[in-house]
Amino acid sequence: MRWGAAGRPLLGLYIPAAVAVLFILVPLVGLLAHASLADIGDALTSTAALTSLRLSLECSLLAVIVSAIVGVPLAYLLARTAMRGRRLLRGLVLLPLVLPPVVGGIALQSAFGRSTPIGGVLHSLFGVTLPFSTAGAVMAEAFVGLPFLVITVEAGLRQRDAGFEEVAATLGARPWRRFWLITMPLLAPSLTAGAALCWARALGEFGATITFAGSFPGTTETLPLAAYSAFEGSGAVSRAITLSLILLVISVSVLVGLRDRWLGTVA
Amino acid sequence: MPRRSRGLLAFLAVGLLAGCGSSAAPSTPAATATAVPLSGSLTVLAAASLTEAFNDAEPTLQAANPGFAATFSFAGSQQLVTNVINGAPADVLATADQTTMEKLVTAGLVGTPVTFTRNRLEIAVAPANPRGIHTLADLARSDIAVVLAAPAVPAGNFAKQVLAKANVTVTPKSLELDVKTVLEKVESGDADAAIVYATDVAAAAGLVTGVVIPDAQNIVATYPIAVVKATLNAAAAAAFVTEAVSGLIQKALLKRGFLPP
Image (tube, rainbow over the protein chains, first blue to last red):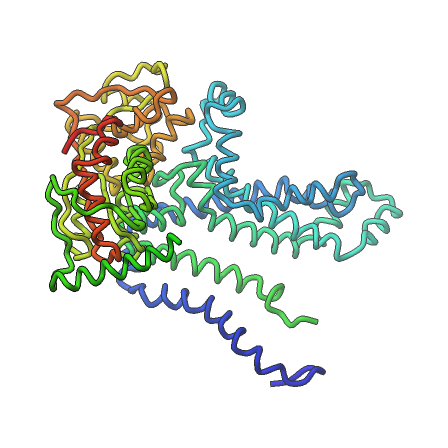
């Protein structure tokens, strides 16, 4: 081991640090210890688990796409323009990060439920009821995932100045051309990271989804909801554990995918 | 002060149990016994449908037994059972069906359950019934959004039985984990109909209307109540059960439209 300029770390810090590591590690080990290969095999071949896995992947990817379409322009405006009330706007965008998800779900229900003005119009004109529909589950996931994408992309934009865009402008490139040919390609790494974080959060979404979209296999019962109803609904703990493991594997994959960004050596 | 007295009572209760002999299982209270007053504090896990009746009973219980305090936790019966299996600290458990309670009896975690009340199912619809829902068969209409409790929830299991009796196949929009959440979907207007207990409809008067399910198609839900063996206040827990079977809680239940045991 190499020590920095400050020398050997204080021994007294090792114990609380070890507690912190164990605090995260022990529950995960517990999860693994209670899982059996037979159960995992059963789950991966059961239509119920596969239905919720497929639904989870569909909903979370749609949530990322929706978030990217509206989130990248928002991040650009937050990073590159001197709008009035920008700090307030950023605070608003960050709110779903700290808001309890169930509050988000109740808020979505209050705004888009069938008996609300907006929900009523959607229902009578298009026959769409967002609660109980896959679209409702996607909305709940985008609501909680969007801030991750916006702040990551905004940080990416701030990390470099607008030099390339300015050069392109002096060479006569029009604004949209500059945006697509210079800003977007340079944004690719932070957009990828933001999308991955948004996706991971969307995939794990529970509170807003169950409150706003309800829970039904194939339409709104995503993996976390299926794990919860296996645990709290039928007391099928082994199934709940297996579904949790699937989510754990996906989460670890996201972390591995982002390792250069997060786990790389701090310069 | 309540915390202190609780500890003391718990100590006394344990002493009492030890003095009584080997069996930790509290005996079924005789329907007439009111000798042991309610004292200390109790944690009572109760089926969601019992929310209003138990909350109604609390102040009367407190008035009759100064110093007594109850903490209620209402949820789907199957959730409560999972909690007890996982060691949730509780003194008394009341579920909405025998199936869920039987799990804890088999696991040896509760004393002998007693039936303390009964209930029937109703269809909950929006006030004034704008969608014209009059029978269980109407729930199969494709223009009606129905929400039910999940099959593992007593209310969901009963709803399944009732629909089977009526020979009706319903595709619900959502399967909720307790009956109050099912009802909320009709209250909010997101669903057109739900199958809940008659007492749930009564408790939400003004927000929903009930459509009676004929006796031939209906079921009777019998609610068991039991003392959790791990209780530290066994005497008060047994007294609470007695109040539920024939005392002040029973009165509150009847007032809320529950049927006598």
